[in-house]
Length: 313
Image (cartoon, rainbow, N blue to C red; front, side, top):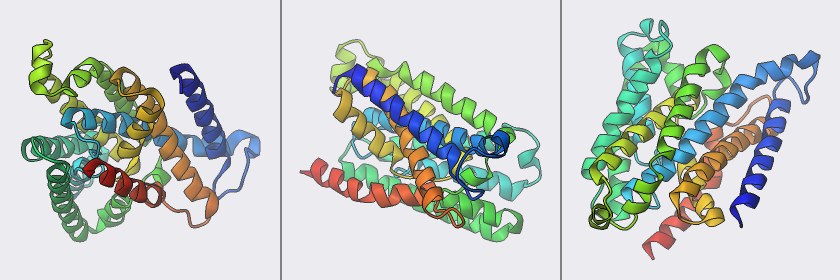
C-alpha cells in the first residue's frame, strides 16, 4: 500500500475509533446530556491515544536498536520496571506521590530506564531467545517487587494491582493525564529524529560506523527515549503488552522497512490498537469492562507466537 493511502486509511480508522470511544461507556451509548458524557470520557480517550502512540513508536525503536523483531517494552521488562518505580514511590511515600504532577512520571522513568539499561547490557549481542529470556527475567523480578510492595502497603494495593493488569485508564482525568500525555508526545517526536540512525543500525554496528553513524550515541538516545515513552504510557494505562510488538510489524507491512515511515506509522497504529482494545472491552461488557491489556493479550498472544515461529525459522 502506498504511503499516502496508508496515511489516509490510518487517520480515517483512528477518527472512527475516537467517535466510537466517546460514545461507549457504562453511562450508556451516545453523546447525551448536552455533551457531558463526551467530557467525561474524553480524558480516557486522550490517555489511550497517547499511551498507544508512545508504545507503538517505542516498540519500533526498540526493535530497531536491538535489531530484533520480538522486542516490545511490554515483553522485555521495561513496562514492569516503570510500574516497579511507581510502586517504590508509593511504598516509600504514598502521600508525597501525589503532591507534584511529575513525581509519578519521574519514578516510572527511573524504573524503566534501569530495566532498559540491564536489557541493553545482558540481552543484546545474541539471539531472539537471549533478549526474550532477559526480558522475562526482568519482568519476573519487577513484578515480584511490585507485588511485595503492594502487599505491604494497604493504601496502594488496589492501585498497583490494577496497574499490573493494565487497568488505569478508568481513573483518567485531565489533572492526572496532562503531564504523561505531554511526555508521550515529546518522546515520540524525539524518537522520530532517530530514523536514519536506526536504518543504519539495521545493517549492523560495523556497517553503521562505516557510514558515519554514531552507533553508541544513537543506541543510548533510543534506550533513553524508549524508557521515557514506556514510563509515560505506564502512568496512563499501567502494563499493556503486545502493542509495541504488533504496531511496528503492521507498519512495516504497510509502508516498508525504512524507519522514517515505520516510526510514525507505528505511533498511529499503536494509538488505534490501544484505543480500539479499550473501546471493545468497554463496549462488550459496559458494566464489567475488560481492561485494554486483556483484550490486547487475547489478540496479541497468537500473533506473537506466529511472529516468533517465523523469526526462528
